[in-house]
Image (cartoon, rainbow, N blue to C red; front, side, top):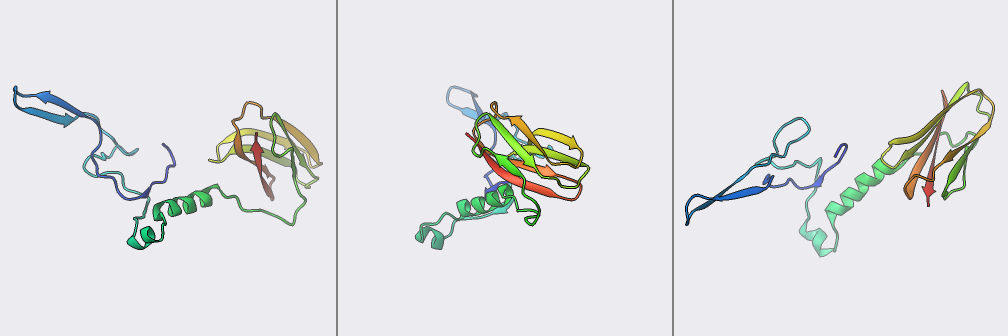
Length: 171
């Protein structure tokens, strides 16, 4: 899976399945006949998958009822999914309704910019809808979001000098 971050400990390197066969009535043998590889074609056999962030459980954590691996995963996941507020002193972009079911309207004030790009992205940052608008007057634009899955999305309004990001929920 692209852009995955593995947190925890290194796997054992026992990859693939095992095919067993009989050498004789009393002797059975087996071998792994599937290879598992990194994207750069290096084998993971006998090496394992190396984590991006090594985290192990500790006795103190267990005694406190904590899961340090899960805590680190949540910390990393929240950093990736969070979006900082940008230009909070600028005129607000309105996105409504929020939560939305069928349509989403974005109202952009006069930003004194020649062009504006509006992106609707999922929580992984993949742009699902994009629209560019020329002109420096305020405007409203609507998107049909009926086909989108239920969940959280981000609306980004970009100009040459400004960027506004708003979280929306699709019901």
